[in-house]
Image (cartoon, rainbow, N blue to C red):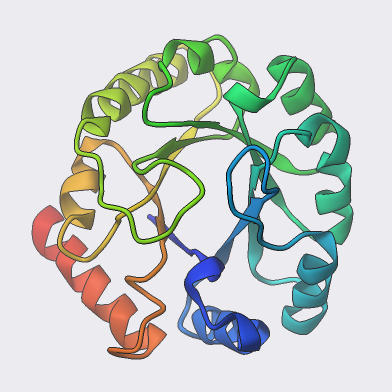
Length: 227
């Protein structure tokens, strides 16, 4: 089980401090939401900020970059050079998704493909042998604070079956990551569908408690549901 805190929901005026709190709480991944104002309406941060975070935090945390951009085929190397270990790209935004994921892996990063709530699973199945992760969006990308879309359950279960079939035939294991509306009250149920990697934003970074306290609450809920 991996919990990847979405740093976009942290205090952006003290981003390095907030990220260090997450790492010090025992979290090894940091989820970086990259928005270009084109593929999605909002605009966030890019390689210079990521490079500064890498310098501040050192080599330990996995920088998990979710590229909500329309030109990933042109700019993916900028994010790898800035210190990202993993890039997830939208199948809807790539002209040649197979070529893109192959190029990212050859450049030294692990790679994932993102599918939006309205995107069919079938496109991902065609390149499942070439990727490390599928990011299933349980909200529409580009905005924080949206409600979880329950219908993604069927999509996740189909993905899990396809991944299990691939592994049983000697193929690559692939993580299923979920992003959007994941909180303590639903993380256990979502895990039972086959998800092993959870992007959590306001459930970790909020004014109610520290990151460590929120993480403990999330983990307790997960363990209660899954025994």
